[in-house]
Image (cartoon, rainbow, N blue to C red; front, side, top):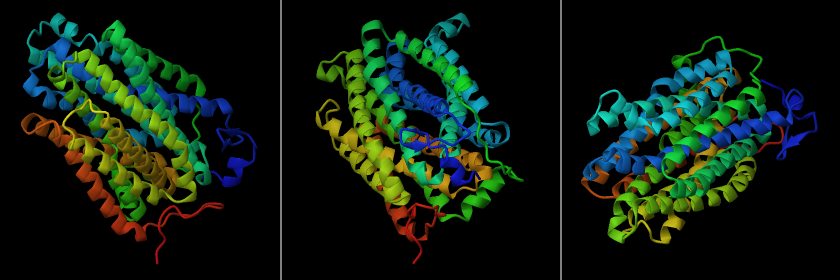
Length: 448
């Protein structure tokens, strides 16, 4: 592990974070630029998919929930299949090469995504079902690209930053993720409203290629000097099973990481298919959904610096608990709403957004602090494996409930799960003890 004194001796800072002597200001800049880029690529599918499936593929309205959630789950299936391997690879071959490859895949296949129907027709596939399959395959490949890049940005934050400042570093990573969402909902969606849906695919491809440039020429690997003797799922399980802190961070990630995807996918579906009832054009409803998510992103943008300070001063586990509580309450309020276009929706999504930010940044930081440094990439890879498991469950069951019961059910399901998770972590909080570093408060509640 890099010594803390080595991490702070240079005297240079990036956004208040000390820069180690062996790194440059540009390395930090490009790391957070890559974080922004991957955030855009993670946010945009939930916006473009409902309108694309409805207007281009012409899917049946009665199957909109299950088809949309299934398409979104292609990314989660890719994550579940490969994220553990990618985490181990990052400890063996480095973070940079995986990041570059992931952005390259996204840049190419986001553009091909917009031509899914044309590709299907060129292959002689004329049925709607066949065109959906082609769309699913392309979305799956995009999912692989995203999981190659996204986990590396989190791991590199931990690589670059000393533990005493890691809360601020993780919060800044989250802030850039929020800025990416603002870019998607506040700029890209509004441009597409005037220029057409296909422009969203081109803009997404451009962001992917920007990520290639920033990560290829702006990032450097800063791997722990000590190498792990054993790498693999068994070693990850052994370490996690012995640590209450890691178990808590894994459970929190399992539940909380899917908040925004569940919210954005089902809110967009709700708005697009309820638009006619309220006399609104589907594309305008998509733009309205984008504005709603933009407000949430702006609120999160303000909240992230506060979260970062509280993480380092108050504690990791406390922030996780507050986050789970806020997101649970916000989602339950959405479930109790009859009109997706009501002004109250801005408040509800803001609660979810702040809760998501706090719970996930807290869980990431807690896991990084609790992990043996030689297997940091593997531990965080295991942490990211929790994401697709949670998303597969909540998206698939939520889509079925939406089609069979009503638009409110996915939000109720997810909100109750967050509140239950909050109660569980509260019950085990006294067993969470994280190694303390000079100048740092305890990250969790100490044993008594």
